[in-house]
Amino acid sequence: MEAIAHNLQLVHDQIRSVCKKTGRNPSGIRLIAVSKTKPAKLVKEAYEAGHLDIGESYVQELLAKQDSEELSGLPIHWHFIGHLQSNKVKDVVGRVSLIHGIDKTGTARELSKRALAKNVTADYLVEVNTSGESSKFGLSPDALLSEAPLFFELPNIRLRGLMTIASPDRQKARMEFRMLSELLDKLKNISPDPSLLCELSMGMSQDYDIAIEEGATMIRIGTAIFGSRQR
Ligand SMILES: *Cc1c(COP(=O)(O)O)cnc(C)c1O
Image 1 (cartoon, protein in one colour):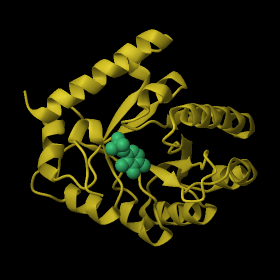
Image 2 (cartoon, rainbow, N blue to C red):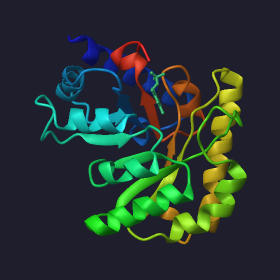
Image 3 (tube, rainbow, N blue to C red):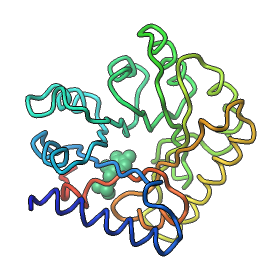
Image 4 (cartoon, helix red, strand yellow):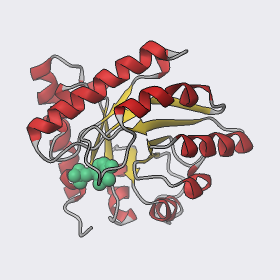
């Protein structure tokens, strides 16, 4: 078996075992294979192993892989998981199935404007800074709740849930994941369409077991599938 296929299988086994322990259904967890800095050839390996959800963090790299000889035209569900600057929004609209890292109302406005112009609907998540670390992107929990009405009312974009990157410390990570899950419940209470708000994108190679225990619906796994990275 190819290395990538094998790694994917190990992660799926782990997801199943955590689900069994916590009484969750594995079908409620989408595994996003994060291929940033890795060549298109490896993404193709994941695709050929039956894996369709791919995450990228850098706009130029995403576009290059989508247009690469290996991957162009394949029915891959691309996830943009990096920090999205307003001036890059136009490059990803209509090219990804979900944008995970919107952290400003200004970026959401730009997304709405570009989606409207292209006559598409863009699904996105808002990134929340649950750890409070100043080095991390994301809205504070308070800002999220006070700015939520604007996120709800912008045309041609749909807020589908929340995303966070947790602290390296596993105990802290658990509290941060729990906070994200509670925030999603609060958002549902004030949303005009709570059924749209169903995604919790949380958990990476080091902490996805905890994230699943705390209710993750999407986990973003790079290293455990594609190996370690230089950057
Ligand atoms: C790189 C990255 C991941 C994957 O991290 P690993 O630790 O390699 O699994 C997940 N989420 C985001 C936002 C990332 O930038």
